[in-house]
Length: 357
Image 1: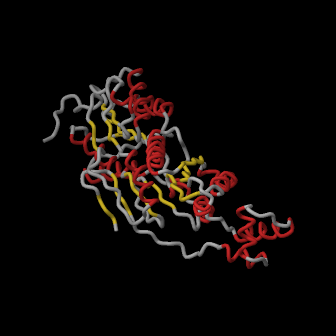
Image 2 (image 1 turned 30 degrees about the vertical axis):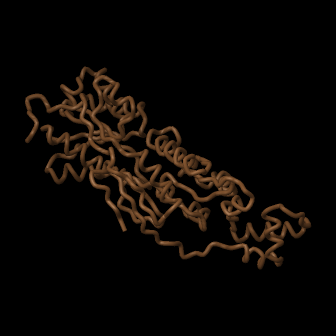
Image 3 (image 1 turned 90 degrees about the vertical axis):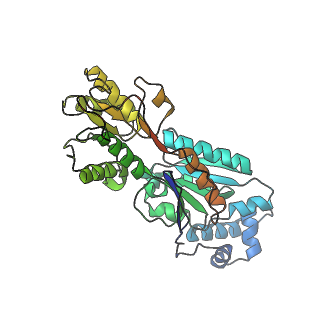
């Protein structure tokens, strides 16, 4: 079932295809180690001394089977506070930081602790120890930001038997875990259509990397809007990496082209860099070139000119992912959303044109 929140750029998907692989249990460990269930339990809890040779056999069986004790249940038995694990590729980027803050806030409200592990999707194999440390805690569940970014069987295998929820970013991809969605596609469509409606003949784009070498969904949506509108798709699409520095480089490249009148940047930081380079090149914003971004970071309304952007509901996404993890059968009660286009000073009709409509 998919629930669309009217007027919002977020969705909740509750369809989950459970893994066909059954995770190993304590019974399997006892069988492989050739010991009784109480013996395995004593090794796991450390409540009663166990002979070294027996402990070694149990630990070897655990490693062979990939068994992971139910930390949340153990925490309840021992009177400890359960932990929500969060796996993320970044903690400093605006979207990730907002989601992490909202997850931590919801956890505090509901009596959970939060343990955050930064795992680089590109070097997941080197992060196995970090994952093992995290998942060895009394984990009630794990939130992954976002699951499909990793695209790794190792991560999926590590999380077998553990409740998981995640935040997606608008890709047309089926996912086998409970997830909420921040709709990047809709945001990119809105920004591109808005610039065309101002009277710009086409819209240039500063892109960011997608997964697996593919174009990012924000770039895909931008191309689709231009194609459907019959507008020319610019031959040059500066590639960036989400940072202001890469925005500066992209802006310097675009400033050399006198035909550039509108630039849609994949995020606000890129837009800041582009505007600075246009200024240094003598191109005025918005009189000569309109510039917009996505996210609505706090500086967007403070820079001069203030930045036209699209606010994505990251706070909602973090809270909803937490609620979905704790109660997969429930739908977060959301009365609307603040995701929307925010028009400020950095965009205008091209010189000699008036806004359509």
